[in-house]
Length: 197
Image (cartoon, rainbow, N blue to C red; front, side, top):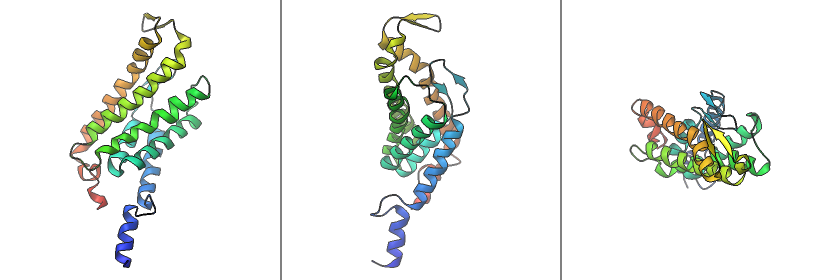
C-alpha cells in the first residue's frame, strides 16, 4: 500500500478504528455537551432538565456515524454521572438514566451524510433517550407513585413516567431541532461531513 493510500485510510479511520480527527472532534463535542449540560433552562425535582446538551452529541453522530456516535453518547453519560451530581436511586438508576440514556443519542449516526439527516437523527436519538428514561421511571421511580406532578396525582407508574419524562424530553428534542435548523444552512457542509472526504 502506498504512503498516500495509507495516510488517506488513516484519516478516515482505516482498519484500526477511529481516526485521530474523529477522536479529537469527539473530545471537543462531548466536552461541549457536558458544559451545555450545566445550562439548565428548566430543572425538575426528581432529575431531568431542559438543556442544549443533546445537540453536540447528535451533530457528532451525524458527522461520523453510528459506532462513534454511540461511543460519544456513552462518554457523555459517564461524564454526566461523575460531574453533574447524579440524581439516582441506586446503581440501576445510574446505569439507565446516565449511561444507557445518553448512548442512544448516537443512533443519529444512522443518518450520516444524508441530506437533512440531522433532523430525523435528532428525532430518533431523542426518542430512544426518552424510552430509556421511561423504562427507568416505570421500573425504578415507581416507588414515588402515587405522586403529584403539575397539580395532577398519578397512581400509575406508567402514566407517571410518561408524563414526567415527557415534560423535559419533548422540549429537549424540540430545542435540539431548533438549534439544528438555525445552524443547518451555515454549517451544512460540516453537518453532512463533506469536509471529511
